[in-house]
Structure formats: C-alpha cells, structure tokens
Length: 170
Image (cartoon, rainbow, N blue to C red):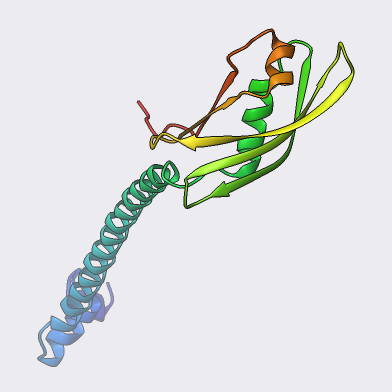
C-alpha cells in the first residue's frame, strides 16, 4: 500500500483529508442532507401536482354535469327542432319539410313553418304550428290543419312532441 492509503485505512478520502486537517466531516454530510431535502421537496411537489390534477378532473366532471342540467333549461337548437319535427310528421304518403323555426323567449315556444306533399294528390301545402313548453324540456303542439289531418285519415289532429336530451345517467 502507498502511504496515503495506509493513512486513511478505507475511509472516504475527503473525510480522511478533513480529519488529517483537523476538520470534522460535516461538509460531506451536509451535501448528502441537501440532496435528501431536495428529493423530499421534489416528491412533495409531485404529490401536490397529482392531488391538484385529480381535483381538476373532479371539477371538470361536475361542471360538465351542471352544463348538461342547464341545457334542459335553455331552448333547443332550431336544427334539432326541425329534424325531430320532420321525423315525426313524415307519415305514410305525406312528406314534410320544415321551412322555418322561430323561438319566442316570452312564450317559451317554437313556431314551426312547414310544407308537406301528399304523394297521392301530388299537391304541396303550407302551414305552421306552435310547440309550447311543458317546463320539462319538452315542446308539444297539435297540427290541426284540415288538409294535413285529412291526408292522414284523422279528424282530431296530429300531436307533435319535441324533446331535449335527458341528463339522467346511470
């Protein structure tokens, strides 16, 4: 062995130098303690970030649920009203086409202007109907136009129900 190796007998060289110089080995311990504190700080920040992210996901879910609930309180888009109306009123030999949809905030109702063609007479007719809200996301109206209901073989009229999507989820 060389003289420095014998002098330190397997100790850390820095500690041996500190001991030989009359200083304590605190610098090496302080360095390790600093690394440990840094590691604990990083782990704490990562855990805080994960907790914050989980809370954010929870808040986003709650917000989307509340937004869906509010959607039932506001009127349906006119495109949805027109599509549902055409689907419900195209029956047998009658083909309907929505020409215009208007919403009245004052009455919470839609006025749907539409035309229909009876394939047996090949004649096009025009009329409108008011769909009034029942307060639960549904709009109800009765088409009582004579030529329309006669084409269906009905004398009382055709009831049309337009609905907003349900927010109930299982």
